[in-house]
Length: 405
Image 1 (spheres, rainbow, N blue to C red):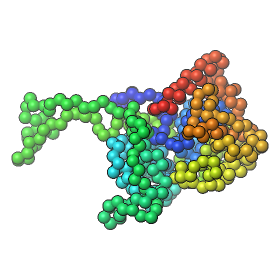
Image 2 (cartoon, rainbow, N blue to C red):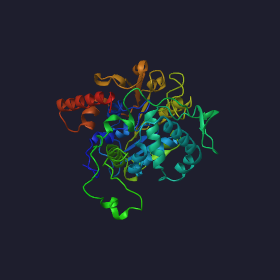
Image 3 (spheres, rainbow, N blue to C red):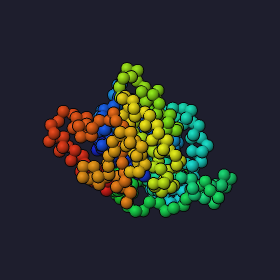
Image 4 (cartoon, rainbow, N blue to C red):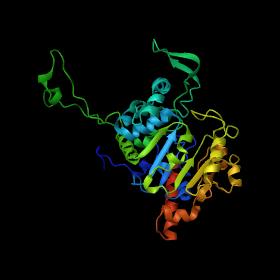
């Protein structure tokens, strides 16, 4: 039970409140088997934080560090806003699906990202704008790929009216209508409707409606009681995420800034510990469709592979790289193991459409064997039967989650 009087399942602390193309929530159990309970965890391409949020080990522990990074300022601001101002972010994110608001908020967010967000996010580690964070979460929930900046629509700075331009604006696509809501708009967050009881007629007003406070010629009617626009379960969800992210450091910049010894091995008490790095770069342009990422570059996957080859030789590093089957064969040649996580333990996992069978994880030579890590690192000192039973329960829940929240 929380301060708004609503209970919410603890699993909400392990799920991002927005849909995300290429998220690795279904691969997370295997990632943690391969990494183990590392002293330092780093995620240079944060995205939906699916792997971090699904970490099976206790969070916010002394002498353990968790650091994530993303180049997209809107995404970073959303996570910071949930981390530091969960109530205000939930209030901005909870809104009906209105097509005009979708376009208007997209335009405002793109302008904010290009004018104010980049400098302030980089200059102040505590800076965040919960209104912009909530608007971004809501807009992504009603249109995936809303912020590529490849549409023609913007707002005239003088009149405020929507106008067309040659490029760099937003698209006026329909809101997401394929199901009954996703992310912060998911139907499971909805509250019961309001009671249509008559207003209090037993006297001439009381409280703020008492007759003594009326102005001459005005007669107010008491309103029926209803919950606020902000869905209470959404506030509870953000409160859980805020607690989970309390000591997670959220960076905004190029991925390579987190892939240094100084950034990844940061705790003086545990300098000899292991750093676990999960890298999920935009897949190479020749193996997937273009226009899927707000910040894209054809060479990122190759640059990540080159860095991983060097860093993977360090026995203090456990590194996992995600990609399609043909992307990182150089890692296999260097002795890295490759894992087909899309069908892990018999459950259909991840990917989209015909591409799902191509999803792979490459694990550096100093990662742990997956099954041995599964039974000890994830489930503690359980016997083998108990560990397998818990794994089956976990996979069944994930299969159910894949079809909805």
